[in-house]
Length: 129
Image (tube, rainbow, N blue to C red; front, side, top):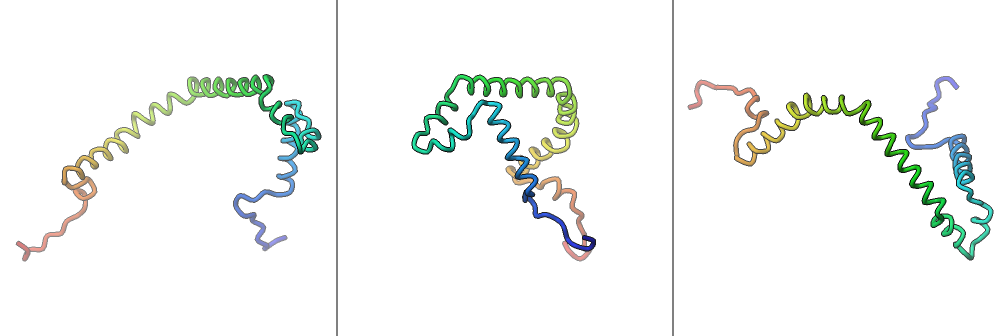
């Protein structure tokens, strides 16, 4: 209890998590009218799985989900993300990250010293010519 190391390893699932995922999977399969008993017991013929995957209802469901996700993303981008991302890109990324990187790459290509080499301190010893 106290003093014990009760940390889980990264990426591990608990029994409760596995049971919850199974229940969610069963509910999703039930929503799409997939009969698990017929799928599991039909070992000689995979036509039931093939018919479910190729059915027009499955195509309609996939199209509905993809269009809903696209509409959600477009709404999210247009109303919330476009202004901060554009400001970040124009006011931070370009002047402080991309343009200095590109300028230094051109300097390396031309054999000139980079910004880091130019900013490095130099020491002058009087007896060196």
